[in-house]
Every structure is written in C-alpha cells, then in structure tokens.
Image (cartoon, rainbow, N blue to C red; front, side):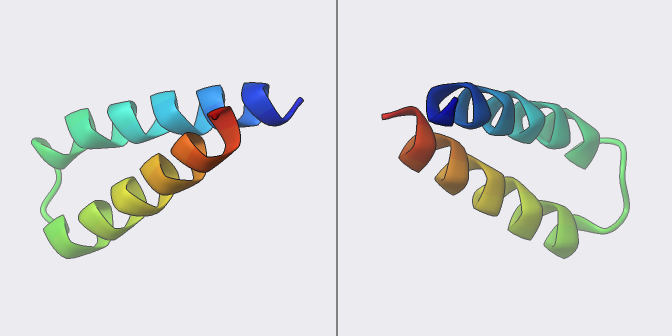
Length: 45
C-alpha cells in the first residue's frame, strides 16, 4: 500500500508540473510539487 501511495503522489506531482506551465501561482505550485515528489520518493522506495 505504501508503494502505491508513493506511485500516486509521484504522478500527481508530474501533473502539477504540467499545471505549472499554465498557472500563475508559481511559488505555491512549486512548493506542492516538491512536497509530493518528496512523499512519493520516500513512500515508493
């Protein structure tokens, strides 16, 4: 289950990265992306 949560968090972060190019709130988006990538990395490994 932990690996599944990590995998999902990683792909949500990838989607947020795509959203970053379309959004105007860069700082908030970057913070959320970094947080989700960190969670995804820690949970998946």
